[in-house]
Length: 298
Image (cartoon, rainbow, N blue to C red):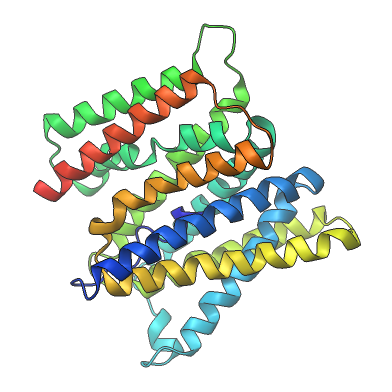
């Protein structure tokens, strides 16, 4: 999932914006493919085991990065905000578990349609936690986005289920994670904000995943290997993207993940894109893009 790095690595200026955009599109396509494998594997094995395998790959990636840092691994991971990183790592584990669980219950399309509210929740939380002054335009974007979510969930219409709350809870947890990331990276380098959630996450998921370990069927060894490689490759693409262009410039292209996920849901899993989900997701995305323009203007 794209969410893991969106708030952690931001260069000072653009080097090659066109290459950065292409890398972002490739990254979101890879994250969408990873989500597709998450749904397939979580349908065969328990969610905790699937998330644990994902974190093993992610942790191996950040450890390798730390070992290759020019300032040395100890200096690279040093942080004055370890309690915040511990909280962030815990939030991220819970968020990923909820969204993957949601994939197995309501599908990829509806889960991502609801999760699209996350950038607007970040805006809403930035006021009380970061002390940012929010204009009425940004609050209006949040309100419109919530209307879009209500259209997707359709409470009171006989189609709402508690399972639909899983991606909404996941979006809230990741929004809180992202705001804490902004708080932690105000006064220190961004690499510790990437490293420590991976380490905290692999410790937590291993602790809760190993007791739920299931025998892996031979026919699933290749999909698990591909899933692990996608987890590493997607983060590598995103890091390379942010080396070429600032995050704010490519952020609108992150919404393409919804398009890629929808295509996977329709073609691979025979999911259905209902009209309310399509309309609600379009409203949420439009509100998110409007809030992004207000952020740039601010």
